[in-house]
Image 1 (cartoon, rainbow, N blue to C red):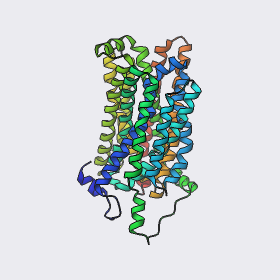
Image 2 (image 1 turned 135 degrees about the horizontal axis):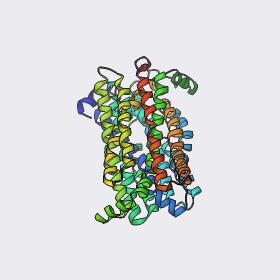
Image 3 (image 1 turned 45 degrees about the vertical axis):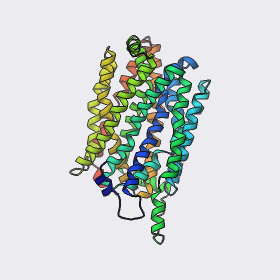
Image 4 (image 1 turned 180 degrees about the horizontal axis):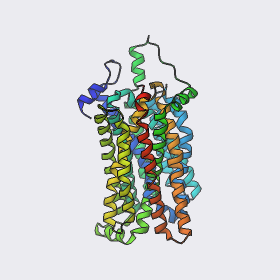
Length: 447
């Protein structure tokens, strides 16, 4: 983000954070989100070693990848968001980081499916306190015309975290085992939590200190906020679209490592030997770089494109995600069908970029559909739905479909291949929801 962009994004009120602090805050929050996805997604590259070590079925891998995390993520998310509407958001985020980092480390000590599921409950509990207060903070730092770009920088932490999860998880597991990989993934968050707590400013405190006599807006009740959200067709359509997108993303990420191990085992072994690595280390690096770099590029580009084209037509915020999903889906299917390992990996670059372009536009528009006192809750309700359905049920359903197909005689390799191809077709109705939201967007925006 340019200096000019930041300068224009900060209100004139001297009590608000400086442009330099705003740049620092958005960057640090991106690192926080990156760590949340590192801890969330490291399990995907470790799925096969964990499955063999603990004797799990695909449905159990899907459950610990999604449902075990999502249950507490969804239950805790809304109460934390309500606290974020008036509380000290940096302190809330710092506490959340500490919780999910500690439980990520505990995943490395699991001795059974139950132990791993309980640890994942804890990871989900902590991560529930990340995005609602973080996006609320960012919305206070930048105006609406810059919001998609700023949110896109934060959201770029998701693919960046997935990159680190794949690379770090794969390399550490190949040398010291999957248990050590969880410890290495969780430890950095404890330091970042201190940075958030002691270096990020809370704009509300600055505003109150410089304008003590000004009345503070009352926090809307949860029922009143839900009523406002339910009255917004744009919000309902965005929730539907992002939920379906999350179903695809979390399901694919949960089983992508398993897909390559089962369908390209010989080629993986040859490629790993060429670089002096074990297959899990090579695949972790390859998938991490492909999905991480393409995801970061797609997120940043999506935010930039949305802010640029929205100057002429605000509906570009919905058009860009729809086009990205529709164009990217055939490349997903091709990646699952080809026999060549290098070609399959290369094909993933296209949907990895295009499917990430929804992050900035979608989440930024959600901030603009409600008044500032409702922003954290609006985000939390969105995350509640997408986490319960997309994250909680997505990997579990794909795991069940894979097990059923295996039971029908397809074998483990073909079972996971066809389960993933069916999964990515959900992008079509998701794109239709984004396009439908164009009709009501202008009327629904308020801030």
